[in-house]
Image 1: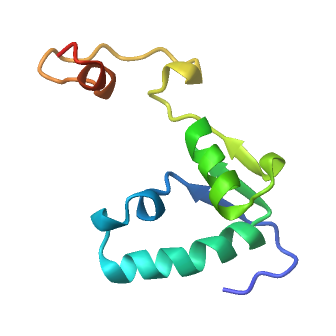
Image 2: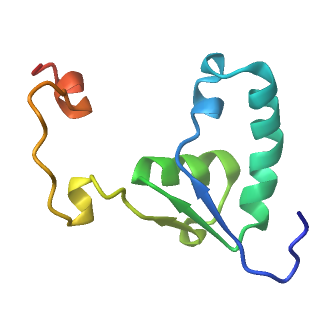
Amino acid sequence: MPLRGIPTVLTVHDLIYRLFPTYHKRLNYWYLNAAMPVFTRKASAVVTISECSKRDLVRLYGVSDDKVNVIYEAASPISGRPRRRRLPRYVSATDYLSGTC
């Protein structure tokens, strides 16, 4: 949709389609690889959920560092919000990756 002169914000959660293309359907991979560079270039601001995703956007799409804003998810310990106690039957990604589970 052409939105010339209207400020726009693009939210990017990750670039999995670009970093791990085998995990995406072919048409989705083609579409995102064609569209995302255009979307990021035309957006007034880009919001992402982590510093890692921000670095990926800057590195892969040449987006200006000051154009990308990191807004952490509510469950992130960095967000400053108190975390809810997890039920014992759930395993966190941190525990899984660190091998403590």
